[in-house]
Image 1: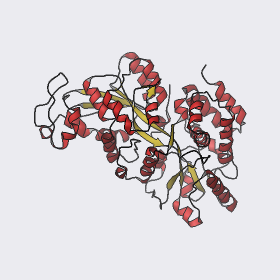
Image 2 (image 1 turned 45 degrees about the horizontal axis):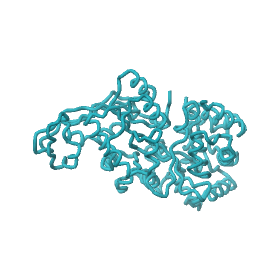
Image 3 (image 1 turned 90 degrees about the vertical axis):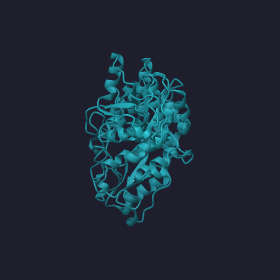
Image 4 (image 1 turned 120 degrees about the vertical axis):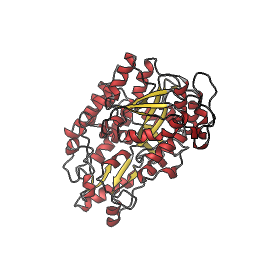
Length: 456
């Protein structure tokens, strides 16, 4: 079973499958409804006119399966409610916290959904190998011009495009307290050297340590440490080396990767710098990622490296703003020559049918119009679609993330452990990096253990 970071981090309530989609209303059409059987498509009017390109399939239904649960799935369904009402295409959505295990079972057993929202390129490749995933229609392909080309590559298998990206998240953030920084006279670091110098200044000032962290996450313990390594590899060696590392053309034992591990050790295994308000270096292995940032609010810790989705972990009422209790800044590149490195994740829409109504939905969900609709109804959801009006984002962390994810200057790469074979990225790497923190194993030993686990 392949478990992705995106799926395992959703702290959601499991709900029964929901069906969304209303009949085409007279208010949205000035002629009789069409069907996918060849009759003329209705001419849509009023608020529905913008969906004209997707009309002609009233009375049909498509099914969608994903790992997204309530309350996030509630806003997902709201995002296409008007489309469904105007076109008459019902979208029957089902979310499962066992999605990664169940999707292959369903596909193999013939219980195939029309769509799957897949949060890992590796799982997409696995599904493509079954021969059940169909190539997207021409309009969906054309819509991909709104995305950085690297995103299209993550929705492709062996160079063939299959799945349009939907959501995006930014991992490369540092959480801190603007109020505490201002009171102490500290400035947000603009470079890695500045970040390390600030860490040293805070440590020497005494009273509290610069960093707190936690990599405990149940059966997924170790994943935050993989992020730290991924961010340092990308920010020190660049995208090409990162890509070769993901495919194991460059091994963990390579000097570029062990050098990145040493940079992580100098940062997050420095006993003078961690683990503020919690314990020593070893305590990072037993502290849950959810609890890791709490010492910032009690002035025991200054910074936490975590993703944009960590925003949900701050207590209700926390003022998250540039001048508030909590905010975040982009983790700087280790190597100043690397332009704005961002490690992140996302989700991709794969289709298992090419029926006309399925293609209509597929085309719509690959547009900036749909992404904008999703942004309007969901705080904490970001798209890397460059056609989305950034003024639609009302949450400050969403604004920060969207700006970074859509910037042409950004060097974006998908979460490496979600791209690597499951035996490595969701297996031995988690285990070995946890032992690195908990037991103090050497870098060569840790790198060797991970390389040995790579499938032949």
